[in-house]
Structures are given as structure tokens and as C-alpha cells.
Image: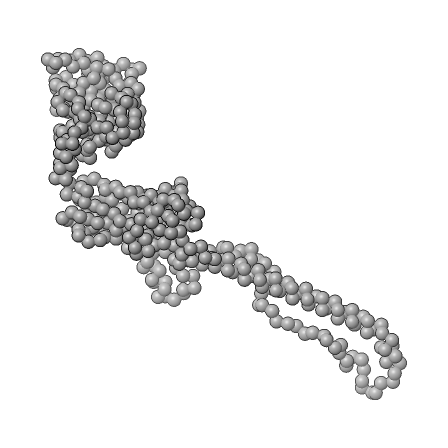
Length: 415
């Protein structure tokens, strides 16, 4: 049956309701209550709220239409529903011309996740409140209605309520973890070493310059001494002259570190960039936590061709490695091949606008066993300032044989 046929001929029922006037404003409590009741109704297929039609008990009707000043857009109504009802109710709002009048049509569809209820106190309705349409009347939701809804969901979806997620940190199933060790990074070790060598070299240079000044002064004193003048008047043996004598205490060159002061000063200036890979390796491969998720499939069949997306709003200042960091000193072909292999197994990680997005493909989730989400665990560095915070991981699992995505939230408390 077309929308036109419903408007012109269909009687009010559990799936069809007529309203003479438009819902204004979009957050009108009657609108929120009517959508809530329709979404929970025990009918298959789409449900309709038709605005601008006055329906009478004898199934006659008057096409009133929605005047232009009362015609709100689809986005306004969606905002009202999203803010007030959970889970999300799919619907579309459009206008259709009937007998020269613009009739508003709310088409509610895909309501396969009941019970739908109020997510907050709003519009005279309390949080958790739920209503259901039966025939042409609206009733509060009862326990029997909820039991029926869950029974239908279980029968229709073999995976409904059967997928669980557990958090694994450093090979342990936990709900909390400490901050990471903040040992001195290689760049800081190098900075301290260069600073120490520079201080030693500068001190020795000062000593050398002082010694040179002392020797120059001693030479000047010797050249002006009465003894030298007296010796110059002596008749020395043939072949012996002053040029054959050396001043006692003269020093030759001393061997220091291979690099000059100028070179060391330049090294000190660029020490962070020179040791960047060393610092990253220490941070993510030696000090960071290794984090993974165990996916438990408690159904009777495999979940096939899965895609997992994990979102983490990073307001705790943590860092997640975007790749496996190879040991900087490792140069052998074996170590290179190993690093490349691990990199291929590491999940795709990107950070944007303060949010981490982690994605991974999983061939299948076997039932009755623990399935690890990532072949190579995430490297997560948690600084000391994150102590006392919580990390909220939002997981979305899609698969070829899942009727709808499985969404889970996993919380890790930082101590």
C-alpha cells in the first residue's frame, strides 16, 4: 500500500495514527510520546504518524494539510528524538501533496531494538519511562511487554546478547591498571652525558690556558733575569748554545674526547631529534602497557568477516603507538624482517581532534573460545598525571552475519 493510499483510505491502527495539526515545537511532549509508543508497538514493518489529516471514528477523514508556517524540517524532529529517547529510533519526515494540501508523514522503521525509553527527564516524561501503542491507544510499558520484546529479539538474532568483551592489560584480564614507569629516556641520558663531557672539557681548557699563561710568564721572567744576562757574558764550550736548552715543566698535547667543544654543543642542541627513535622505543616497547580485548562469542555459531572499531576520547593525556617501534640498534636482516612482520599484525591507529580511532579486521569469532581482537596488542603509555582517571573504550563490531552492529563500552580505571 502506498503512502497516498494510507492517507486516503487506511483506518487508525497500531501502525497508523492521524494528527490534525503539526507538532510544534519539535520538542513537543506529545510528539516524543507518540514516536516512543509507535517504536515499541508490536507490529512488523513500518509505522506512520500522519500530520494534517483529521480522522473520524467512521473512518472518514478531512485533509487539512500543514500550513507553511508550521512546516518544520526533518533535522529539528531528529534532534528532539535523539536527545530524549534511547536507543536511537530510525525515522524519516517528509511532505506529500494530497488534494492540493501538504501532508506531513513520519515514517518510523527499523525498530528492532526495543524497548525504547526516555533517556532523561524531559517534556513531562521521566528518565526510563516507556509507552507502547496498542490499537489506537497508548499504554505504559509493562513487564510482560518487555519480556516479549526480549524473547522476540533472541529468536530473531542468534547473536543478541551473546557477544561479550573483556579488557586485557599486559596479559591479565583487569578493570584497572597503574600509570606507566617514567624512567629517564635515552635522549635525557645522552643530554646528561654530553653536558658532563662539555663541563669537563671546558674545565680542562681553562686549566690549559692558565698553564700556558704561567709558562709565558715564566719565559718572560727568565729572559729578564740577571742569571741569563750573566750567562750571556760567559764563554760557553764550542757547540753548546741556549737553543739546546728546554724550559722545565713545558707540557705537550693531552688527548681528550674525540669531539670538540663546538661539536658537542651542536650535539646538545639536537639531542632530542637525534634520539627520537630511541625515546619512542623506550616509551612504547619498554615502558608502555600492552592492551588487547578478548571477544567472547557465546552463541552456537561463528561470527564471520568481522570489523572492529574502537574509539577513545583522549582527555587523560595518554599516548597510543601508531606502529611497532623497532629497536634502533638492531641492524640485522633478521631483526628487520621481525619488525616488518609485527608491523603487519599491529592494528590501524590514528589520532584526530583528541580522539583515537583503532580499527582491525578479524576473520571470524569462534564460539566457545577466547578471541583476541588484535594479533599484536596496542602499546598504550599512561603518564602519571592520568592517575585517578578512567579510559572509556567504545567498541563497535560489525560482521557479515550480524543483523546489527554490536556496541560495547569497556572502562579502564587508572590508579
